[in-house]
Amino acid sequence: MNARTIITLPSDGEWRGSAAPGRTEPVRRVLETTGPDILFAADAITEAQHDTAMAVYGCWVDAGLAPRASGWFGSGRGMEGPDDVPTARDRYRAMMRRLSVAQVLAVERMLWGLGVPGAMLADVRAGLDLLEGIRVDD
Figure 1 (cartoon, helix red, strand yellow):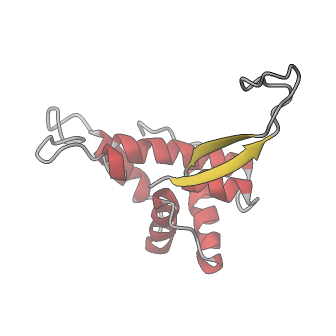
Figure 2 (figure 1 turned 180 degrees about the horizontal axis):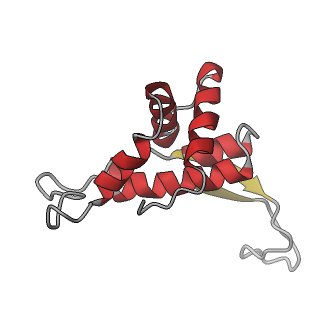
């Protein structure tokens, strides 16, 4: 689940249809942010951990586990293909098997964008450090 963040950006001369040339006004933007983006913006995880978290996030979405990416009922997203070829869901589960139960819970809480309590932050960092450099197709 992505969080919505509303920020006000300086317009830097952006013309917004004003009749007065050179007149600018602040521009409001709504940004979709992920759980890893929120932790990175708060300096809770390093850039390398953020890169790893975004790779895990992409695998999580591809596996059909993200809220809006789960597909329609009965579509079998993440389940198609022959039995001997690993699906996106199989690859995601293989990645998560490398972590402890506490790390899986903390990392998935981050993926859902639920916020990570301070006590779980160490588990998120440790889990991302273990997954760093892991290719999604491993």
